[in-house]
Length: 365
Ligand SMILES: *Cc1c(COP(=O)(O)O)cnc(C)c1O
Image (tube, rainbow, N blue to C red; front, side):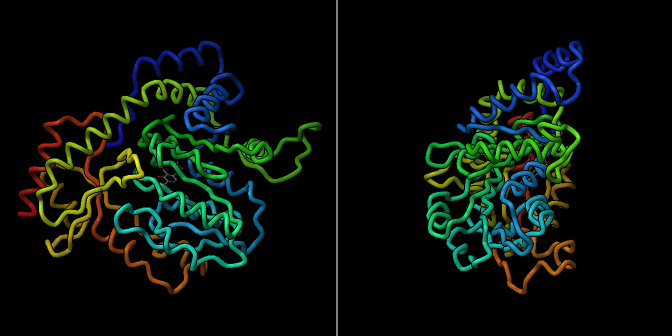
């Protein structure tokens, strides 16, 4: 369900890299991919890195965080978001999910702001954008930075503007199951020249600009290769088709599942363009099912599904470091208990969708 769907164009550009010996990170394709993706998202600077996790680490590395600084982020998100925060010695402060969009509940953020709060991480979950206007209001009033994680929302829009174009600094993943992929890869976008420069240094071991082997700070090797960037460039040429296919998939599922009782389907707020990166459903516990049992049942019909994320407050890695408070996150808990995503790959056919929906109808009857 995560096939990257590679084509002749990818092969052509990768072959060009190989023929010309551009197999590492110095070369035209990395810069061309950075420019192309930054332009697509309406940003000034793009800094390609080796993964979405690396992008988040680099983005947080631009904020000059001090130990004990707090970053507000959704409880219901991918673990990489917390890793990036913790890796800089900052403290993750979690906010429960919105029951409809599954993104962080913007109305619950203000109660979490303290004098140590530095930034809010807005993660567009499964392709649906966060409600950005009230988030901006808050950020403005409390002088906070917005970090956008658009790893699951390539091409998604909030009020006709593309996701990745909002954060003071924004992050993407190009992992194999994302809408545009480089196999492994990621990117940081920003309009700030100073952050772009720092991000490039953080990506590349902070080699000296005057004296190469004098390093002014700690950096990493988070470089993307030309081979990967070439794949990304070829993929980007087909982004409109990819997005159209995801929407077609979601509409097809919606039509077939809207009458099935006990299912909550993904939504699209009036201000949003959802790209349905993954088509998620939430099963009502009154059906007698939770996500894991429903997944097992679907598996008996040879249908592969994945359960939703498990909230950050449940992660042993954070609990044992004393980074989780006693607070509860009921919406996030509900989503991880009852939510799963159906096959959402770009090669899915109408008859396969029919088969998935027929199985669900039978199971939930
Ligand atoms: C995939 C993903 C990441 C991490 O990206 P990798 O390339 O796998 O490191 C981060 N955040 C979100 C929301 C993701 O979906």
